[in-house]
Each structure stands twice: as C-alpha cells, then as structure tokens.
Image 1 (cartoon, rainbow, N blue to C red):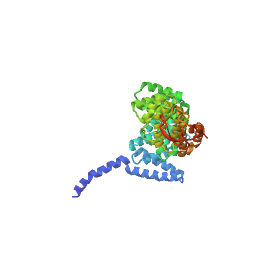
Image 2: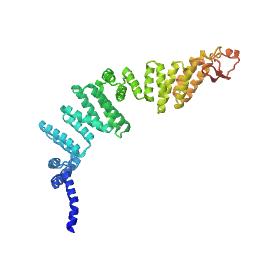
Image 3: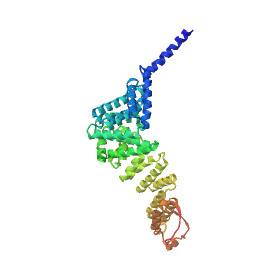
Image 4: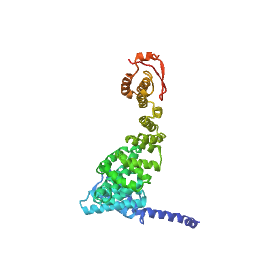
Length: 438
C-alpha cells in the first residue's frame, strides 16, 4: 500500500522539484541561502546602518544569486540596479565602471527574459544607459523608443524626457533625420497631455512637458515643421493618420496660419468627415476673409456634441452670415448660440448690430426708417442684462444708436406717441416700443 501511495505521489514530487529547479537553479539550498543573506544585508544597507563588511557580504551574495538562480525573484533585478550603482560609485577604475554598465544592461535583458514587462524595463534600461554612459546614446535610443511604443500612455515622465533628449542628440549627431524628432515630439507630447489630465502624478508630467519643450525649441520653427511635413503631405494625401499628425504638431507649435495646416484639415475632413473638423475649417476661412466658405463649413460644425463648442460655432456662423448680408440666417444662428449659452451677451450685441446696420433699409419715412434703432437698442439692453461683462460695450452702443431715434415732432407728425407698440418692418419683423430722441 505504501508503495502505491509513493508511486502516486512521485509525479507531483517530480513536478515540484522541476519547478524548484526552474526557480532556484540546480542548487536550490545554496540559492535560498544566498538570497536570504543578500536580502538581509540589503535591508540594513537601505536603512543606512550597514557596515563595510555587511555591504561586501550583500554584494557577494547578490552576485551569486544573479549568476546561479536568475529566476528566483524579480527583486534580484530591482535591488540589483541599486547594488550595481553602488559598485560604480565605489570605484575610480573607468574600465571597471564600463563593465559594470554592461552588467547592468545584461541584468535588464535578463529581467525581461524571466519576468517580462518589456516596455517598462526597456525604459529603465535606456535611462540608465544614457545617464551612466552618455557616449552610448545610439544604444539608449532604440531602447527608449521601443519602451514608449510599448507603454504608450503608461510611459513614465522620466522615460519620455530621456527618450526625447536622446532623440535630439541623435539629430544633432546626424544619426537620424529631423523628421523623426518631430514625430517623437508628437508622440511624447500626446502622452504627456493624456497624463496631465488623467494621472495622479500630473506634476511629474508638467516637469516633463517643460523639459521636452525646451529641448525641442531649436527644432520647432514653423518653417522647419512645414518643410518636413509638406513633402509627407504631398506623398501620402490619403493617409488620415498623417493628416492628424500634421494638424496636431502645427497646432502645438502655433503654426495654424500655415497653408499646410489648412490643407491637412480640409483633407482630413474629406477622408473622415466630422463636425469638429468642419468647425476648424470654418474658423480658418473666417481668418482668410472667405465668409461664404466659412459659412458652409460652420453649418456642418453645429452638430458637435460639446454644447460650448456648438455655441462658439453658431456665433461664428452668425458673424459669417452677417458679413454676407444674410441677416435672417445670421439672426437664427445667433439665437441658437444664445440658447446654448444663455449668459453670453455677444449674440444679442450681434443681433443689435444687424438691426442698426440695416435700419435705413427697413422704412420709407422719417419714423419707419429709424425704427430699427429702437429694436437694436432693445438687444443691447438684453445683452447687458444677461451678461454683466458686456455692460460697457452695450452702454456705448445704446448711447450711439439712441442718437438716431426720430425726434418728437416726427413721431407726432406720423401719428405715433412715446411708449406705443410698434412693429419694425422688412426682414426684422419684430415688435418694439416707440421712443423719441431726447
């Protein structure tokens, strides 16, 4: 019976022994012993109470574990980075320091082999290589670049800073083209922007942002960026991702007046139509003075989800229609803006301006030709009542256009009286109150 139990237990025993061998190596007892010794001395070292003897024992025991049972625990590599740095600090032999850097790099590779986390580990590897052996920047660059590719928004602030710093060094030494640095800037700044909004460590990313911007400054002129992306735009006009990249980089560096920015935005809207891109295009056409095109695109932008952006879009659309003398459409757009943002006085100022500018077209006698000024002043009063910030501008306009009210004798001559209701004609078609010039 005992033999049967032993035979049944043998596979499990063999499996356990196999796992032990994988984790602790051939000599598991020695591995566990040295592991315990180095950990104990490491704790003492971190507390700052270790003697020279305990430090040497820690280094010796860690070396043994690293070489003989590399899969025992990931802490071998976490602690190992500290221990190797200590060894570098304790020697003046430059050749030995160089070999220790090599060991550190091998340690990072081994950590990936046994415990994964490639993106994170490559970031640590790249930072350590560049800070401890800056002349080896060409080796640090691919490690940092791959780390950022793998980690994405999870990249640490330090890795982003060193990745971009090394990329700039690569450009300086003519190892890569400037276009690759610009792409790196776009990638890094996008990750930083994400973390500024979502990370609990936002302050670290604020510092990273300042570092990256400072490093990029010598390469960030609009002519440089446009020169780089103009050729890419011409070569790949069907690449929506490229269009987004061009738009993003030119926006970040305030190069939005460039023809390339407008072309890329229009092209992206053609490839992937959206109200947001239509809104951007509409704003650009306004800057260029093409109100007709602006109105076409802004009309498509009024379906954006964000009510604040919709309000802005309607207000711009109202202005465009005003310039085009499409007054009814302008008023309709201004009223939509006011519905979305009731505390904004600008739509009412704009409607008042439209009424005042067309007053002479809306009557055929000395009263009716000035009646629109009553309606205009009504809108200015409305503007200051909903938006105290508009009070000064509204009062100035009220004072200006009140001077155009018809005099009392004209009002009397045409059979009206102060305070009487009156409907302004033509496109305005709105009720107001008769008021004489004071």
